[in-house]
Image (cartoon, rainbow, N blue to C red):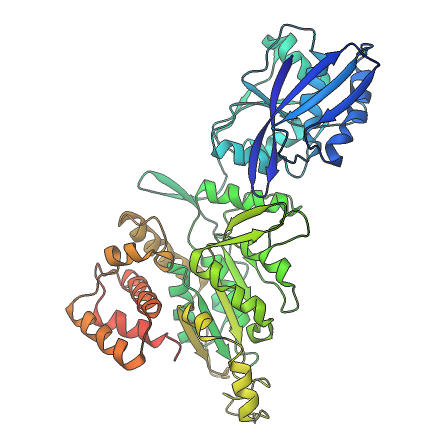
Length: 502
């Protein structure tokens, strides 16, 4: 009995599957066992037709295909190729020990790409489970972005069979994982970025306080809340932030491409970090993930390594806002269902925008607020204290003024972000300032004597929680990095305290 390896997705993680085929003397038949879902059960007809297209004669025996481990649910039409290879080469002496095979078969024997194939192979590569891969030729362009793989791209089932019958003619590609984007090398590691700024901060007139806060947020990946009258530039600032975020590693680009593929999008392998902006009417399941049988990824996970933007945040359901606590604090969300329990990473920059009152005119110098005090209090209380405590930067934006002028471009801001990013890496940090653990805060966010005195006074005056203290120190660390200071000084801590919500 011969066997070849394949894999299936369980949430975001690929699980290795061994495909086995046996021929038994019995009434002719074709059976697939091992918790195979409908997409795999349908493989029988595709495999039969594809094998017939290369003049393969089915023996008068019962063919049983087993997918092991049998207690793992398996789905995906990419199991077609390994099943067909085992049947076609059952009587030969060839072994498949070092190979994994993936690909959906057409009725004429041609191999096709599948939506989940890139995600499966990337997950396997991260766990070092695969070296030699037989894949559809149309999948090769994406999969060559994953470094360290030996690929055998084929167009038809016949070509796949010839890899074993005529190995000297097999086309082999060793993937290097290179990208055609500008990069910067820090401590021997490459970080990719783009110089395109389709939405530029130069288009925002005035709002210097908001621009300064946006720069700090981008440099340290700090959560930020914009409050201001309608039309003052809250959403404009949020949408421009995505283009000045720090550069990314190849692993982060591949992880983004993996999520794009699972969402049904064609991966572009761009170093642009993800930007997700769900509407206030979105369901809790669509934001955090869910599903009646199999857990599905939601917006908080799709925003991993990028931005999650809640515009008009008080209009989001209370259950959604309170459920944000876990992903904002633990950078992970657990989806539990009867059939599956899956954990997703959720390390993102959270941006929120809100009006000062239901009508939006509370801070206006020219318009009259129509809201009662009760309505204003009810509106503001939709954001609980624990949620506000997880916000690093609170920015109250003024109304626009005809005399306001453009001041700083996104290109200039990104240059500062890149400089701060380099300082963080060279300092030995594995995380951005805004995502440092409690242990790393003690190590990297060290205030001098004057700053420590200011912090102790602020703790008593503003009744800062331990989380509030840590948030303040992390913001002060980023401000010090922007000013090129090794330690946090008094002026950095005072500015950081100005951004606390009180």
